[in-house]
Figure (cartoon, rainbow, N blue to C red):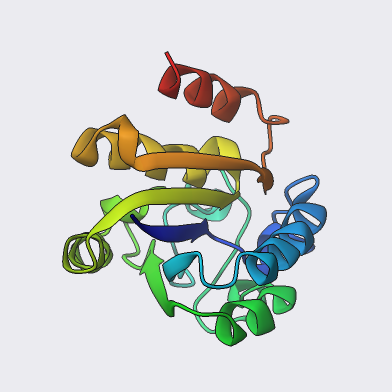
Length: 184
């Protein structure tokens, strides 16, 4: 069975930037080691990334609920450096997909962005992916929404949440409930 590793928003602003998620550096450093240890297990690795225009609707100054974060081409939008070597020196392709790129549209889930959703669904179909391991930031927002949308499209059996490589703003409560629901 071919496996896909789906890493949600491992970006600087969510680690030590404008919207830090508690425990994110520890979770992603551990993920870096995990990827090296799992060399050859994943057919492909997909990373999602917030890629907001400067005046995005999710920002507080524009009526949203979040501070300015992951602005296109900013340092805060960059991927966590500790993941680069493991991602690119282990077996399996690497694809980065963007979301939140339209100024007046919120996209917590990668499946909310039509182009990225289509690309991810093509990867799943063309590579005959039988299991998706999902993790990243923030567990109670973008990971959870991506998981819910993925389950709506593919059903629950395709997904496995790597909670130990996920950090949440709510301490993991919301994601934990979703994971329990997956197993019932």
